[in-house]
Image 1 (cartoon, rainbow, N blue to C red):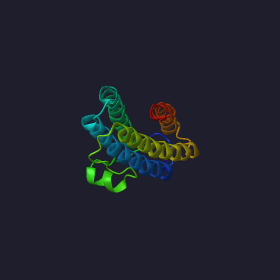
Image 2 (image 1 turned 180 degrees about the vertical axis):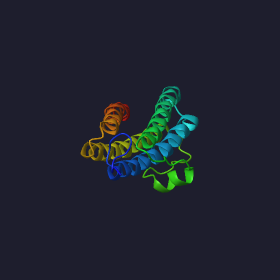
Image 3 (image 1 turned 90 degrees about the vertical axis):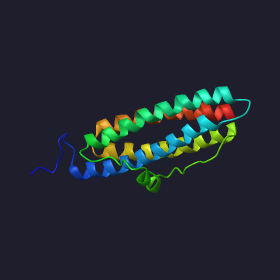
Image 4 (image 1 turned 60 degrees about the vertical axis):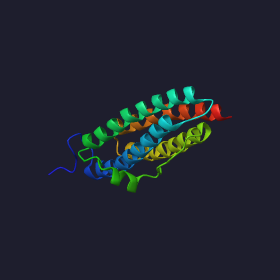
Length: 157
């Protein structure tokens, strides 16, 4: 019996990557709901600008949630799919009742900081496992999100 999965990765590496991807998935889910809340609740002079931006961000997050879950499945494992698991596993905490525009943007920046850190961990693990699919996905996300962080930080400056 082979110690590789159907896509040719060593099962131990695939299992480790799937576990880390499930952690990423949990963080994406909690962050998604935070950004959704910012979109719904933001108030103040930047309402129109931020309301629209938060919709753009949560739409992108929703796409990435699906892609991360599908990557877990591609590795031969099951993605987390209960919100109770997400809250338990996530490094990002629920951000409730935030309506100040600046506080909302700061919450987005904190969320991206966590995601980028996790994705760098995944990128390293994937590179060590010769898992180009996961590495490419993580690298693409990091590149996009670093630019978003720069732009949001500039907005606050």
